Length: 150
DNA sequence: GCCAACGTTGGC
DNA sequence: GCCAACGTTGGC
Image (cartoon, rainbow, N blue to C red; front, side, top):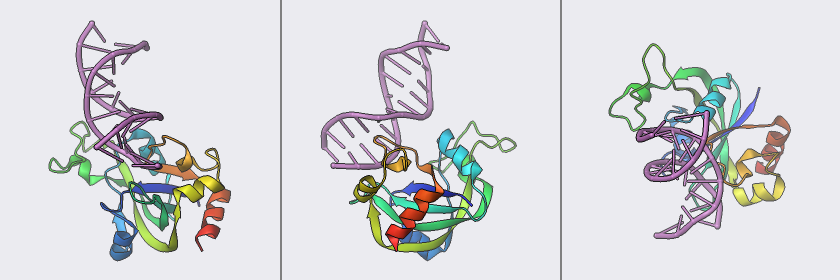
């Protein structure tokens, strides 16, 4: 079982939306490094839900992988903002996971607090200028984050 | 294959 | 709204 962190802007899709939907297909990732992390995810992996572009930014809750290796259907949809004309149905470029809601943290763990607790090497999301929307989290660090949350 | 121009992310 | 960081595109 591995831990990860994924970002989303809560005004587009936040932890409250996932709590309502119970599960969701994490579509729209169009960065190869992030895609590779998505590809590595396995059933049961746990993912921190990070709210970006909000005040304050930080980790809002936890979700879990319920289906791995899902082909992102938006890449073939000409009406989708995530349409990729170069992706062919028999050789899809973009795959992702379906996640389910696990918990919303009692209070958000702010980026500021994460910076005070972890070094950039320990937790990639606190690294300045980091823009990847999917990141791995080491187990020991993940356990500390869970302690901070509850 | 280099790299300038450009677009996007995301904290502040 | 600003802008630093950085990924992508495309001319050469």
